[in-house]
Figure 1 (tube, rainbow, N blue to C red):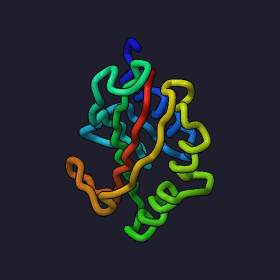
Figure 2 (figure 1 turned 135 degrees about the vertical axis):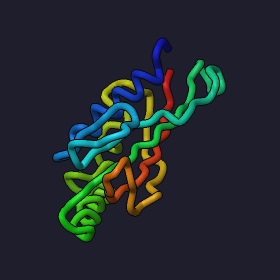
Figure 3 (figure 1 turned 90 degrees about the horizontal axis):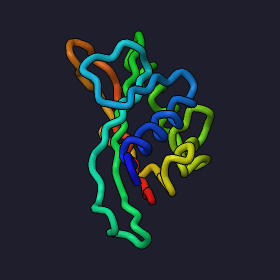
Length: 137
């Protein structure tokens, strides 16, 4: 299970990169230049052997940021990614490939929260946090 966290992160990032127009960074960023952007952050994992067969569970938070000429347009763009279905749906993409491109045994979107304005540096965005859980063997 060498590098299960890195493999899971890279698999999730690759899966998210398939969403139309979404720029993905496999780490948190202090500045964001291309929008919409998804910033992948590792949140933690359980110890090895906590599950049968030496499997472990882990968690990622993906912060999605969008900007537009108007806040209403930014929220509309965000809602496309946060929807449960549709071509830009992050949930639908993860449900269609729960192995995250073969990086994990199983991964899923757990929740979406923190929807609202975000300030990063001197820039203001509309954002949301997508919480993921995975099982690696």
